[in-house]
Length: 461
Ligand SMILES: Cc1cc2nc3c(=O)[nH]c(=O)nc-3n(C[C@H](O)[C@H](O)[C@H](O)COP(=O)(O)OP(=O)(O)OC[C@H]3O[C@@H](n4cnc5c(N)ncnc54)[C@H](O)[C@@H]3O)c2cc1C
Image (cartoon, rainbow, N blue to C red):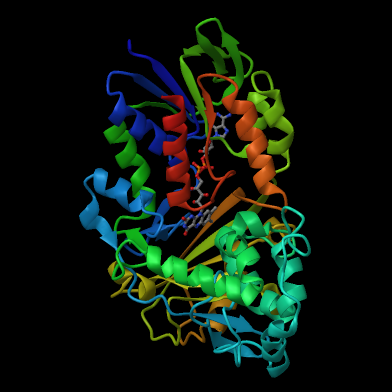
């Protein structure tokens, strides 16, 4: 095959991983990455905080989905991978702080054991009483294709499991709400086991055991990070991929030509034309919808059905001090608190230990983003006060704070998400040379985005 030009829209982890993989497989091809913003990385970003590189986007990568670890290894950075010193987290509830029970699937317990404290005695009894409910069947409760996580769990295990355990965990991953998020899309392992198990507890036990068995190395950590920050990966990917990255160059339009595609890029009033043999769109769903309207109109409506939650991350450095916390705290809406969670980074990650107390906290959930209207100083002060109280800090004056805003930070996998994704993929794959990938589709985590990038490269090649 003669050399070809791939144009990737978006220089987030998905676009850059795709550029890297394409270059690895077809080193003679030209890869151009268009980025609307003025820096590479998309949601991957880091700041300098009290002498450390500190992630303000993703800060931990799931190692069980191996693509991220493998990519770091391929970049020659295996020795920069760091495992957590502790993963012991607690959940903050109106009646105090409780250790997160072990062995749950995103907060869904496999039995009533170990839930005392985090649930009230009535709540624990309600979980145990699932055994008395009629079994879930494919022609009964599971007959509709998808259901909200909250709807199923409230009916089977009671409200407390949702409000006190599942909501904080889903809030951490999606900044979303259990009553709206899709069971099939956010808990696929649990959903897969429901018909055979006949109960939520049984399905959670089966999913947990299958997860433990499939761990590629039983001794390996579940999460990892990178010593210079996950935010250091975009530059390493660009350097290794040989791709030409054009910053401040949004793609506005995409049309088919007899030989492939033509994109209009750059300034909207004087756009430049760029031809491509293949196009991979990794922009978030609303932007992708606009771009695909002309070439894959069937993708537009399902893409518009994927909303986003906005959030702000506040990074804080406090004077060194003891804190009575493990890796962090989950803070569900039932507490009425501003922050959604607290990561005690200098306890969680050994390379950040040994100086200041480094903490990050996030604010903002889907449909609950009014707190983000505050200006940076006000938001930082309110978050610092919340964190100082939650961690009972003896020296609560920070030496540094950084506020990073993520407008449209995380896509929401609402009920029916899988069908929307199938519809997008069907419309796009009908156009030879065109693909979409990224956080909007089959996993918001960095490893899932990399996996999706590889799948798109496979499809295009
Ligand atoms: C605060 C926060 C914390 C997170 N924490 C974790 C974590 O700990 N672990 C984890 O695994 N995941 C985490 N995630 C999720 C993960 O970081 C993201 O889902 C992932 O990085 C998204 O990558 P992407 O490439 O699909 O999209 P993006 O990073 O959004 O990249 C898309 C790029 O496309 C560009 N673009 C948009 N429109 C156009 C256009 N028309 N033309 C050209 N370019 C365009 C955008 O500017 C952007 O750079 C977190 C996310 C956030 C926001």
